[in-house]
Image: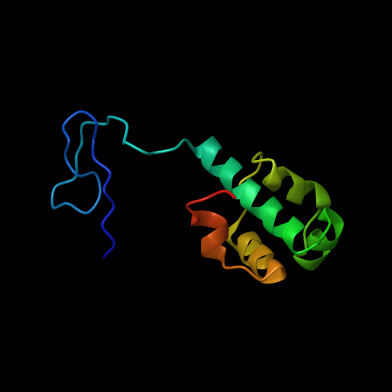
Length: 106
């Protein structure tokens, strides 16, 4: 099991991977908002698409999905379904893990 070194700011207890989870409802060090997470996923999708030399139209046709839907994902305005992430990953020759969980946004 992967150990994640994030602790509660209030009680300094381990938030994940501890016998009794912290219930003090305080924010977690390093935790990002859902909107920021979607924006990061969108940036990775856009970067991979550009690196693969694909346009919005060509990638949307390969997934298949609408160009507008893909644009909304890239802008962080829409949460992609698991099947969409899978299709994007296959079309761009990357892993779904990279699109969803990469540490860097370069």
